[in-house]
Image (tube, rainbow over all chains, first blue to last red):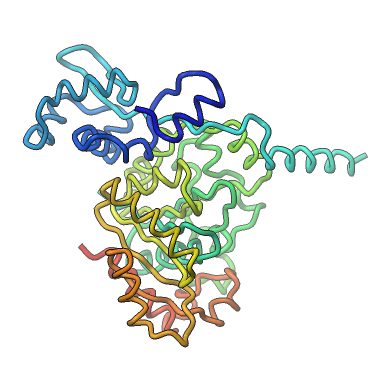
Length: 122
Length: 257
């Protein structure tokens, strides 16, 4: 499922965007949103990853088919799966902030200031 | 585990950085360990309230995002730099500032090349862990962009600042809606720069009803605060001033369990 940033990013670069943005998370179905928010707000979920057991302990009472939901999120590239069964760990994959590619106003200002500085030193 | 409090406004000029600096200092003066991160990479400013200038900021959040330094290495303990006698109120506080770079080429680079948002999120958690913070305040860029949305999403408390202005009212509705969709545990509104001719209790009730959200307080448009011109942390310099007393009550509400 693509969100605003996916679409804009894909148009700019003509490549497949990787990862998910916080805005995309707002559009997810409730079950997937629960998993993503849990990972986003846990320090392990953003760094070393959480175990399958950890996810089950926190979500199995609320969500059916947790393994299938997780597998789907992994296949979309929104969660990164590390390690092999039964010792997998999962962490969220937030999409990198795309730059303007050097066309932005700040880049022009920075270049001009650099030119002025080098010019004044001569 | 420390709490993340994001200070956000949909539009610029609402007093967001001023309130972030003041709320952070109020909490630190209560004995809490507090960090303030300036994620307004395009137009950083919160460092000014603590008396930092470009010569003192030899490292910044940008260095962390570019892999040049660990995040804790770009955290400045504010008391270490409060050498001016007028800033004695900052001494001995467990208050850290993580500024964004005010160098033009650094701002240009991050806008030109982007950065890894995972790093920013990991950085928030690392700061809380390594500095043993009770509260991490995030001073966000106005409007909605990636770092702002991330800050909202990971917040325990989202504090949205708005002025009694029709443009602020409409924009704030968008932020409140996003916060609900991201299931932020606690969202509070703060009305800032309200004209003293208004009935503040009525204004508070109207704003709460409009957004179906709780309002922590209404701060007046204060000539005294304006005269301070971001030169100091006003509430620490004048703790008995009515503006400061109101902000103390707002802070109470933000951190209330």
